[in-house]
Length: 101
Image 1 (cartoon, rainbow, N blue to C red):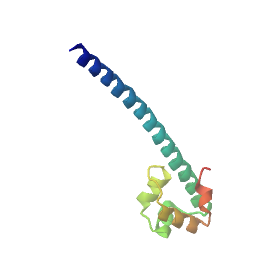
Image 2 (image 1 turned 60 degrees about the vertical axis):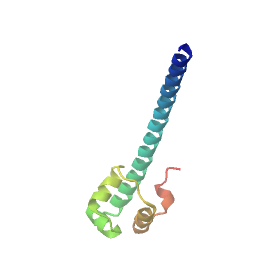
Image 3 (image 1 turned 135 degrees about the vertical axis):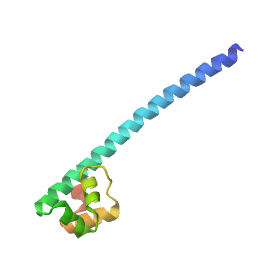
């Protein structure tokens, strides 16, 4: 009986310890993802404004809804490769200009 209790305590400790580490790693990944999305968003905003376009005009030119452009510019939505291509093509910039590295 004592061995089963010890095994249960060790198992619970192991699970709690690893779940805590997983949670910490997940938070770091989420923070990096949000940071990247925000970086791209700020670059897109700068380039869109440089061309004198409103969000609505820009959305129409690249074939997205205004809501998608708003979400991209707020960093809430990741930019797909297809949309990244369209954005860069219309803004006349290289895709590397939108990358943080």
